[in-house]
Amino acid sequence: MTIIGYQDRYRDDMIFMVLEAKDALGRVPRLNEDLLDVLGQYLQRGDRFWLALDGEDRVIGCIGYHGQDGGTARLHRLYVKCDRKRQGIGTALLETAERHLKAAGFRCATVHLGGPEYWESRIFYPRRGYSEYAPGYMAKDL
Image (cartoon, rainbow, N blue to C red; front, side, top):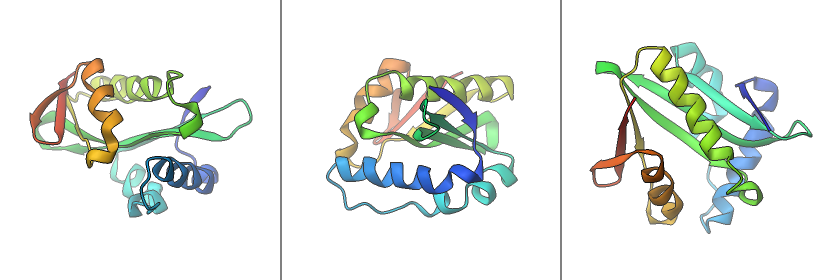
């Protein structure tokens, strides 16, 4: 596995991976509009977005963030291809984002956990040092 900064040539593969991940959760696969324009919604705003690629150059995970006032960043769109979960991909993506945020001077990372169908998030983030600060929201000091 390799983690790279977002490149638009992987856009369609990333979108397919996210839709497949949502389908595996039993959700109606609906795409978040920010994923249609990662360049404009993340990179051109000064934020970042990463992709995890497998040995065949296919997208198997993603994560991004939006910087906020007060040294806080909100993590977005941490998805891992459904048949590649529990292989350290999500952890590697999260650690990549956290390292970048810390180096860029951010002091806190927050995340919205989504609805109850995202039950894995409620297990994943606390194991990596995040704690709930409001219903459905977690944060970690960097």
